[in-house]
Length: 87
Picture (cartoon, rainbow, N blue to C red):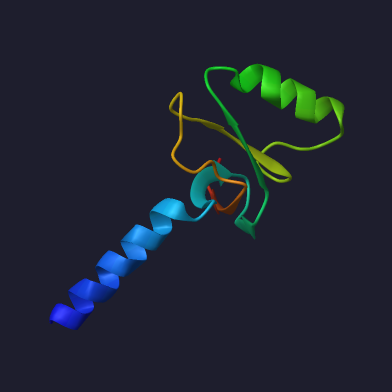
């Protein structure tokens, strides 16, 4: 049992320092992607507008994440899982 706890602790510690995140969103159909992450501090609308002006689509090509003022390790990419909301 201690090996399992040691492995879980090592994985948790590694996850803190890896610039990768997991994001969940709802949408019209199921999709799994690895888009770019744009981390902001209360500037989500401006970041979305700037990326949209370059022809990128939010929640497909990029994900906007509102973060703390000083994130320990800012995410560069994320595993985006979009599930069908049934709307």
